[in-house]
Amino acid sequence: MKRFLAWLCGLLSAIGITACDYINVKELQPGVSTSAEVRERFGPPHMEWRNEDGSLTWEFSRQPQGIECFMITIGPDQVLRRIDQVLNEETFAKVQNGMNGEQVRRLLGKHASSQFFQLKQETVWEWRISHGPNGTSDPVFFTVSFNNDGRVTGTGRYTQYKR
Image (cartoon, rainbow, N blue to C red; front, side):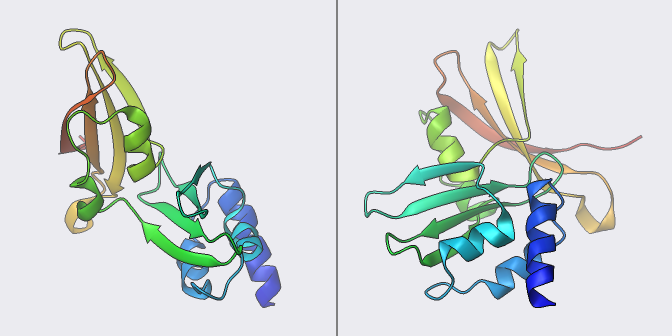
């Protein structure tokens, strides 16, 4: 039964349904679980980064409808090192003016959407970070603004109020 649940969660994750993420994160154990177990539960990563120490970080973004992005680090020995949900205040604070898009993606994962504003000559990426404060269904977004050189000029957030 446990194997079937893991298979089902992996399948649902691969097609973008994230209800099983909570179970997957709880059952994977840093220092014990293998890269094969991570792939079985989360599916293929959306992006993969090589780290200086020989480890890999896999991105599992739940954007545009979800509110999470898991960065999962796998050691050179193919054993899980850590699971981080990066759409949080600590990671948002790491986004600094002058960073490029690749550096921002490495921190926050794939954005939910991108929009170019002609008058300001800037591109804004956004990530859904909440389904709505205090039980509302008004989603909250974190934004990063880039100039024409592709460099961060600022961050912000907004609530998309429904009428």
